[in-house]
Image (cartoon, rainbow, N blue to C red; front, side):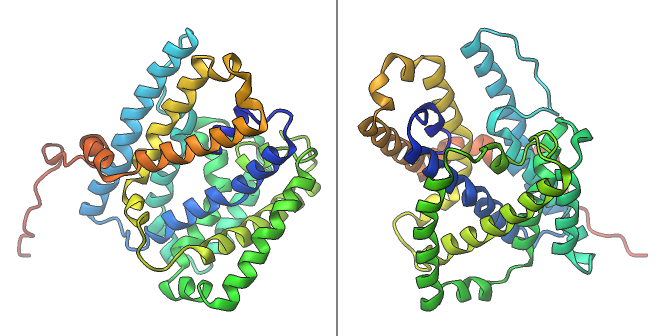
Length: 318
């Protein structure tokens, strides 16, 4: 939805407001969960193998695929570069970097505070550049570290009835708030891909906005997680296939743009059209995360690649 809405957002304050609401919490939630699921990572050989096959290999494969797809769609030559992720590939390289740093966060006394300091410095350092999308990687780092620091009891606390009631109120109140802010707020603040200076703000005001945005998005992320069911539902199985939905949906979005779908069908930019676009996005993403798709893509998203690694040898006695 977030990647489709920009094509139909022009002229709709409601769509822009909903877009801002989604972008306020969806990546923080995604990254926090990634951190939570990385808690057991210590850098063991089997974990390093899994990191390479489950993150690095899909990144390499789909980076090549998107580079070729962009060349086809735009008719312009785009050079292949490992250091400059294409479109949505930034998240895979970010996850690779974040997970590699997990052992570091285990030995630091104040991991969350340290990650916040790094993120704050990154937000006021224009010289970081575009390599590996490090500006975004560093600015979003605290969500990953917070996820690493969470335990099952924290999620149990979020699911208590009083907390859920407050969470529902918070999310409901966020809708008119973002509708009110929609015309004035610069969307790039949500992307974390630029420094505050590049956003046109001075350092002091920019740092204040970054801190306020972080706290607000963290509250919204907690509210969303509070309302996530704690029991197994029909959509629970989709969680195992999110990487498939993530790497594939970009082809649908860009393909629609390259084919001029929205220009040739102006009805899609009307209120009913925006609803239809949203429903199509929900349906497509659901289907892309289903077990059949995961099974079909397992050779590239979860390859064994035993041929690429040394066999474990028993330790020799001293």
